[in-house]
Image (cartoon, rainbow, N blue to C red; front, side, top):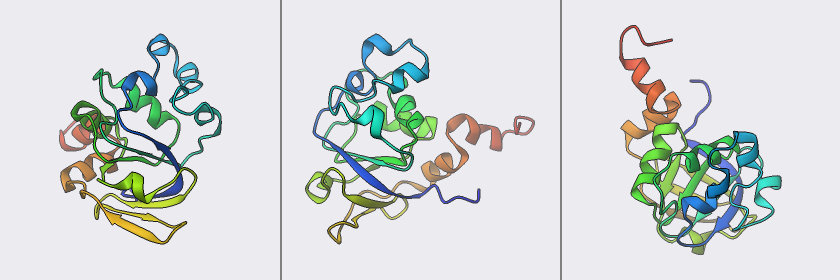
Length: 171
């Protein structure tokens, strides 16, 4: 892969603690086409997010990001916005797993909300776990992503990763 998907740089969108999957993808839109879901992603937490998020932006959140339902539709909708990654102080276990399975980079970094404000420019190194606030010049080390999970992200998710390793399923 020519692009380094383990490093991300972009504008931070900050969200607090306990953001449930129903805020990421509101329940009434779960069965709607992706275009409709994208018009409502995280709108109850920040009404500007659906219309102003840009490819490469980075979601930064507090504790228990992605709690509640284990539906993979929430990380799929976030990924479809084009964001580079999600950095949170902690994740719901199912959201964390679903992120890697669908190819959405996620990084646990306790204290990240004290480091980053909404609109700051940040850089994230998944392999190192380092989050750098380029606006303030400060950095923080989170939990580096396991090399196995980095390979899954580089492949584009679990299905693409599995197809790479199973003869006859490469296509």
